[in-house]
Image (cartoon, rainbow, N blue to C red; front, side, top):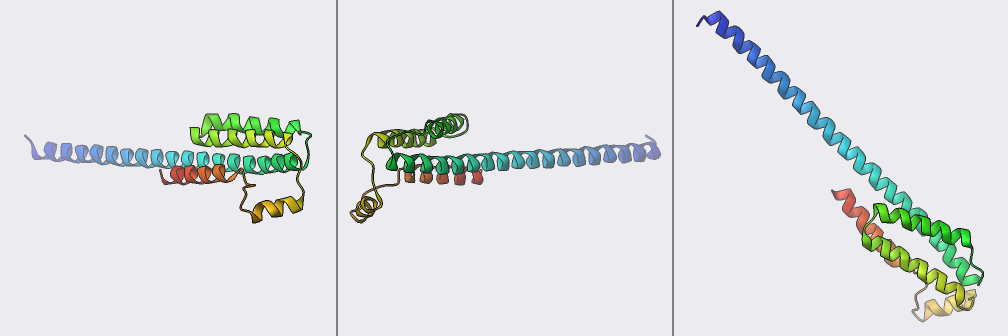
Length: 148
């Protein structure tokens, strides 16, 4: 075989191999960046949902403590957020959110409380924070999602 031909084929093969390697590396890099971006978007989406739920649930629960008249629009908003959680979140998160709804609705049926009763309840070690379990579960889920 002619050395010039062999030299030319070697150069061509090296160029093809180098180009394929470079192209594959770029493709893998873009794929990793896209995955990272999607994960960051998903994390932000859940953080926003959980924050909004905690805010709305706090408002609804405080309204239930102070009044026996349910604010239907607040409850419907909570149900909508729980439905969104069913599509995005773990079963534990959804169950915690549903328990918050049950406590809130039940609180509307209980006698109203004033500030002095709150103070006494806290002093005696009572629980007035139905959101604690949800907050802890959401924090754990967000940490797990951020690590993957």
